[in-house]
Image (cartoon, rainbow, N blue to C red; front, side):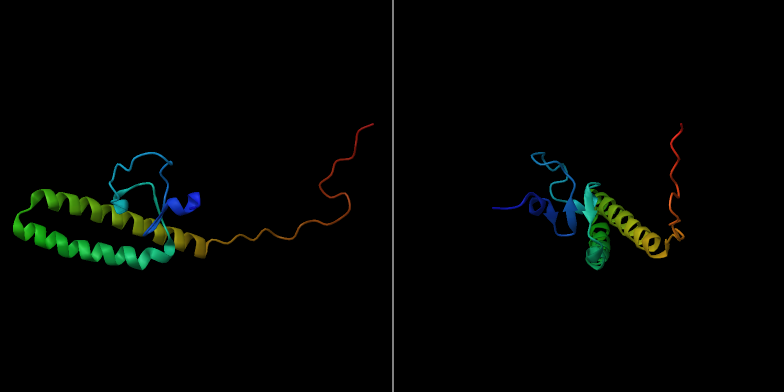
Length: 115
């Protein structure tokens, strides 16, 4: 028996698609806005993007214009996901908040009942 979380697991992370809905991207997850990339998979996504560059050069050399457009779309989506992961990593690494010390005096922050 598979857990529901396992059903949404894909190579690069997890799919945010509702259960029972068809995949409009036909498993081209890099293009999908519902893909939640696991930060541990960032090197893999960078590798995929690099290999797409090789495929793009071949498609241009061969004159496969439809393939060129599809690869460019996928590369743009991969770049966007990589940038979002970098931004998230930078933001979470550099964002810290000093909340100060709480006031522990008796009655601090409490209102006295009105008579």
